[in-house]
Image 1 (cartoon, rainbow, N blue to C red):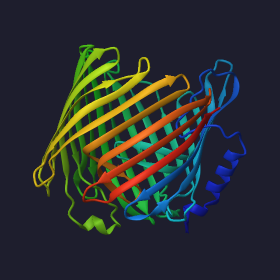
Image 2 (cartoon, rainbow, N blue to C red):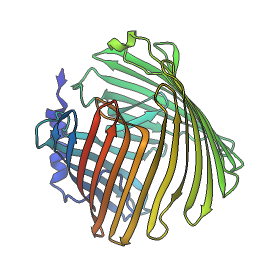
Image 3 (cartoon, one colour):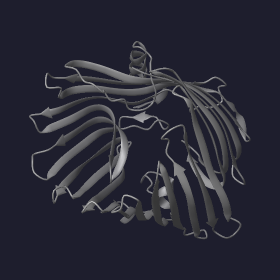
Length: 422
């Protein structure tokens, strides 16, 4: 049986329950600063309205109301015993042009820790992420720590898809084993994830990862994902971070990526192209919140010319009133894809309650992934203003224009958002 996500009773009931409580906050996790014995409630709410005008479609005016809740119970020793976490939104398009501006339940789960002193579990809608894959899961996750270097996790339940409908036959199951060795200098894990669509096997992935710290001056890390159905490596990342000096650090990475499609998808029979990237970055700390950096990346394609991308710049973290960054980007790819661009952003704290900023990215290729689109743009301008109306109430306004030569034209976007915490 397939049920539309937009009309799903669980989604509607949970969100209506959210709005029976005080609406005060935004879409980020809130943690309790000072716990007290008994129940503690915290959260964040965000009320947002947008206006979007694009060169190739009608205007869109989406309205969203987000609400996040954290309900925790602490014992007399202020140890968390059990908790409930929920996050969702109500959404609609005032112009009735965008069918995907809808209501969603991102997560809502019950969590209990220390069952028999060794087991933690989460029950409900939750996000799971292992090297073998990630999913929004309607089901159960169990973590087991028997003592010693190893921990074990198992998960299983419904595989949530917001745009293709919700089917009881869409499931995901898997697990992970993690180990900590050599006084936790080495952390490593292996994982497994298996998806089914309409009861048929869709994907089966194996994953492995590690992170090794050597004498607080060098970190080596890596991820590997293997597609068992296609019998090939689908993702790989190998990197290192050298940070012996307080003044400078060096990071290098190699990335390999090959798309994985469901076995039931028509795309699974087509040849796919892998993407590779080699990157190195040097950071130098100048003091007083100043950081200089140089980054080089070699983008390696199968069907297009490879690209060399160099970015160099300086960043100022706000220590008083001013913050921002400035960098130059040089991209050499041949066939008319060469670009010399600039990134810049400045922000000024006028007083403890008001901050304004503006920025631009000119002739810099960026990708903005939407639900059904992969928008690539080369130029973006924006201005923003954040006002703290009260200690727990902020108002954000933002105007933005993005352009893309030869792709999808331009987009103008205005956003007004009221955030409150409780």
